[in-house]
Length: 160
Image (tube, rainbow, N blue to C red):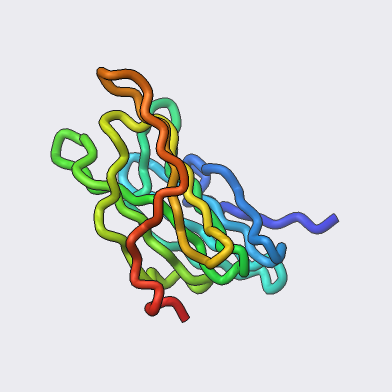
């Protein structure tokens, strides 16, 4: 059994999100958040190294903080995250999708994506052509709105 320390003493105060293995099993991606900063952590389990990237992925803070979930590309080369811009009151002003490489470099960011009026669930996926899509479930005055596998407008030529 090999144990890996995923949070140092400074990070123990931060809330950790869901852990997602890369499809090749070499990397582990997760988020850490507090009321000030949200970090995407990309951990290489074979050389015991990690990259920490500051993101705008915070969903909310209460007793603990929650961030968006990272999603891996099928070839394990990229991590995709939903990020949000907020106004001074803390309300979302725009939501976009960013793609990072395994070294933590932000390679591309989408234009704002439509999420309905009050999105409660959001999911990213990579399709068979290595294109990012999103699905969401939204509740609004007219009832529920479900959108599935909407393409994200990204400049894929920027991916290495």
